[in-house]
Length: 102
Image (cartoon, rainbow, N blue to C red; front, side, top):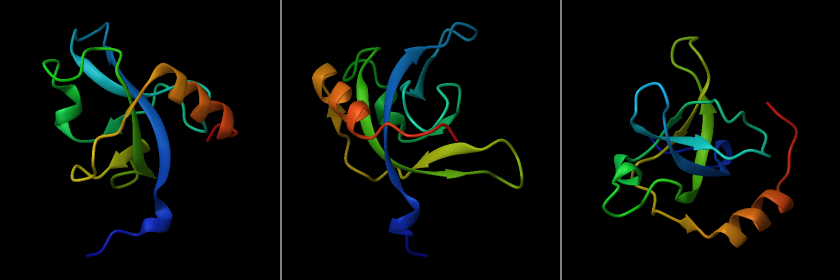
């Protein structure tokens, strides 16, 4: 089955340390159409602290989905190239693509 390119949109995400579990996780950055508490399913490569330290920002092509009527989450295909954002690039992206919350 082919990917529906129209269903995907660019989302800025960052790696953060989860206070409850103590593990690194990926979450959407503030100032976008999605909540910072929304779950992100993406490549585990982004969680490799040897390559990307905590706090690294990424630009993902993701779509909003749910599994059998569960909580909505962002899904990014694991085969997409990794695009790291600098602080300045993330700020420019968030200013250019500011949207209402979903």
